[in-house]
Amino acid sequence: LNKGAWTGASTMPRTTEEHDHPAKRSKSGASLFGDEHRVLVALLARIGVESPATDGRDDPSAAQFAMADALESRTMAQRLAFDEDERVALVGGLKALWDSSEKWLRMCLAPSRTGADSWGESLAKVLLRVDSLQPALVDTLLERVGALASEAFDTDAPLADSTPRLILSHLRWLDALVAPHELVMKLLQVLEVCPPPVQREVIALISEVAEDAQHELVIDTFSTLMVEDCSFTLPVLHALSVLELQPDLAERVMEMLVRALPSAASTDLPALVRALLQSAPRSSVAKAVEQLRTHVRVERAPADAADDSAQEPQLLDAIVSSVQFRREVATALLAEVSKSEGLTALDVWLLCALHSGASTSTSRKL
Image (tube, rainbow, N blue to C red; front, side, top):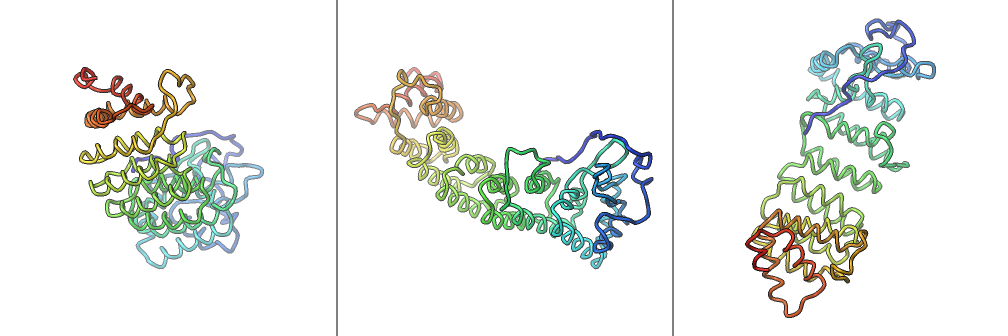
């Protein structure tokens, strides 16, 4: 997985001198979370993390966790987690906190204060990088995704305004996963109970973390989603493009895409055709082209399709890019069209694609 996190500095108004450094803030032990969560607050203090003392009404920065050094806090958390009782207490305390309030969960997902005007990694990200804590924390966070996903969810909203997106972002940009197999299985469970906007986010994450042994299960799940709701076509196509599939699974994906051709929305068809031609196993390219001619219908010849919003020009672009991407696609297209006794409107588009994108030798044959 790529590196990424709440890093870099951002600025907030400076209010009091006690915020110059986390270590200089009040050590009175007062916490926003109250007596119910005092054990968690004490454990966090032992790893160099100061819990917020207020809800931030007067000073927003006071409603954030503070840690002087994220790497040092991570190291201390690793040492603390060697003790099973303390590890269980820390994970259980975080679960209780997150179950109590979405606002408190978001505090753990937000950047932590490292100084007067600087911000670093979130508490959640620091703890997720501790191997012995990660599996249990991942399970707990995904439980919250499932619980929160039934609420209003806007994928166009800023990342910081969406708790489910914040959680999934934290998982997506982890440096390493301790238990990727278990994570995918948990994501597949969450996928079943989430509304479509959240499902699209989960689909993208699944494709990035799935192990080779899970590809078959992932493909079957994605196939079912496409059958049940064609609006998943584009996110599934993108997710499938990330997977490095064995030939037998690539064949299954090709069959899945062929089944989707007859009912595909016109807006999805170009992407579907591109995926079909570019991902089909070499031995099945001719079959993919044959199925393309069988199931795809176009109503207008190139000269009649002047509307840029029409399906045909975008379809032509998809075929041209496939011809340029794979020489065998050009060969299969030419062979298939040559067998036809009469040219259809689609055949004309295929010939145009060959002329535009094929190699010089193939173009001369035209």
